[in-house]
Length: 120
Image (cartoon, rainbow, N blue to C red; front, side, top):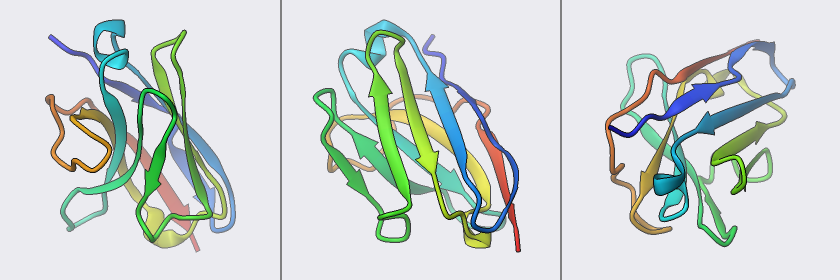
């Protein structure tokens, strides 16, 4: 069973920063592109950003220039540095592998996610 363990969320004021982390098994991490998703209250889950095994990245327009995804292959961990946070960034953030950099469908069951709340 694949485990995806997200951490690092919290409450922050608009304009602030948070760094999220997602740890998973080496067998998954070494194969796939990793993605961060988020789900705002009352909305569908959306893809935020992806990073390939070699470090290629893609971002949703809403977070470009503010969020940075990175990965530590030695630790089987993917990170999401979030700067200049806005209230509309509020939601539960999840990670999941995807089949390719342009794929949007997650490959495994969701972890518990980590809550990000941005106050205005």
